[in-house]
Image (tube, rainbow, N blue to C red; front, side):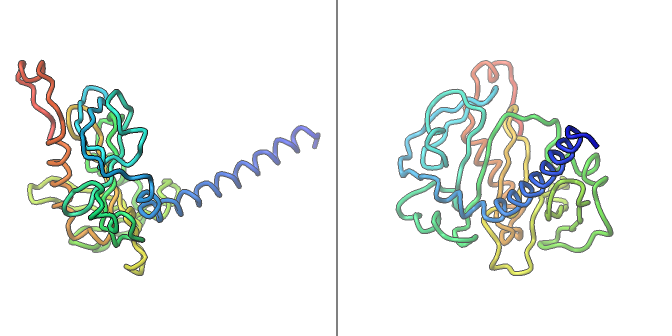
Length: 244
């Protein structure tokens, strides 16, 4: 073997090790996501800013927006929010302890709004994508949902997929890391995405301890975002409606 192939083999091996380390780091980061994000520099200011993402116009109070650099009027690729549950309130001095609580004690929900890049949201991906990634038989999950293990090669780490049907007969899907000890749950060990507005994806993360409220959370967040979308007068004139 020449020196060049040896170097190439070493580089490939090193790359594989780094990728494995990165995957592990991401898994750990996801578990402690809620604890870290609550210390992102909150503000009590509640005056609104206007954020334009693609064709959607959002008006949001500053104390709901997690990052200081996002608290300004203008065009953005995304906006990140932190809200209490069930109040869906932003940061205030009265709620300071909730935002700084460890684990899931603060009962926070983290939202990310960005322009849609996929034609299907998580529920819409159940049949064409997730069913191909199931491993083994399903089993009864929490809150009346059905749990599905996902193939390790799928790239979802220790996540399992929970599926169900809401009161309106629509499919529901959420990915969670379910730990054996409930007290180890974080504010962000479950995540789900859905389409809102004209062309927005709402990705939200919440504690697995809130799964009994999955239907209420989904409906409340859709109402929350819809109430903060500013209709385009041109869209109103031609009779277009916002996507629920």
